[in-house]
Image (cartoon, rainbow, N blue to C red; front, side, top):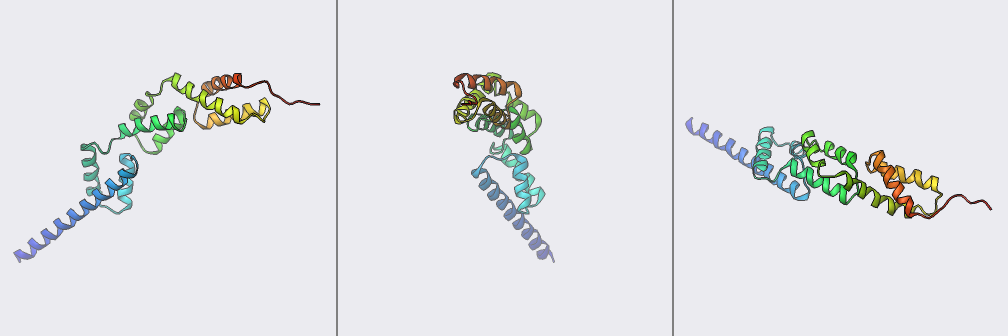
Length: 178
């Protein structure tokens, strides 16, 4: 009878160890592909039907060794979304919220973008885009450029200033009737 209880305990331990290894493998594979927030990785582990307690232990382990860090992820996303994709503060904030990063961390990460940097990046995008709108009259080009910058997540003040700078580089155009 004693050996049966021992076998049952040993079997349970082996299953838990296998589940823990599986959770670690899934976690490391996902983190190697792209940066993930704690919430995103928890969702992946739940989808893979890993026990909640095992998943929580794995998430805590990854945080303790620094492989899972929402604050670092937020700063990285702010930098890449702003410099590479040219997104403004509100669009970046929405992306971070979508990844379930806490509001305090989002605010700290967004402080990395200075107002001047945002205006500078919006102006760069506007100047580039206004060149692509050369075949349109000024009114149509303004409307399209405004929509483009607004979709990128820039505030109306930044959009207006960037558009003024971009249109200053554009020659006089308009509808001509002959």
